[in-house]
Image 1: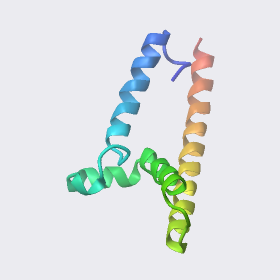
Image 2: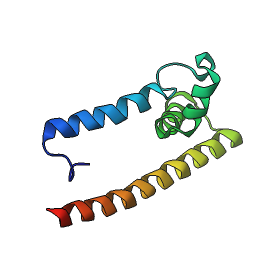
Image 3: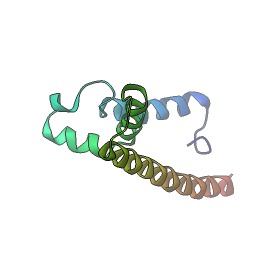
Image 4: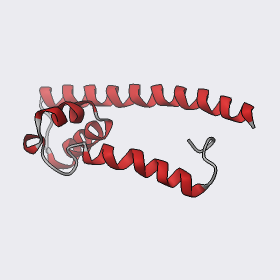
Length: 101
């Protein structure tokens, strides 16, 4: 996004426009049980929710059960895959954007 943005203000606006809905559509603030069903589906694929799960396990849980460990591994793999996917997309977009200038 930084390659395509015209100035820092536009980049900050785009980042906020993307980050804030992701934050509010995660279970970082409200519990999942209080959300409507359609929003629970979004929360379950939201990468911020996966990062919150990992953080909460390390902060709150004194020991890890087998199921909690499996959940942590799944969440970590999900986040790594998500990051790799968007790094590749970012490289492609940056190369195209730099060629255009």
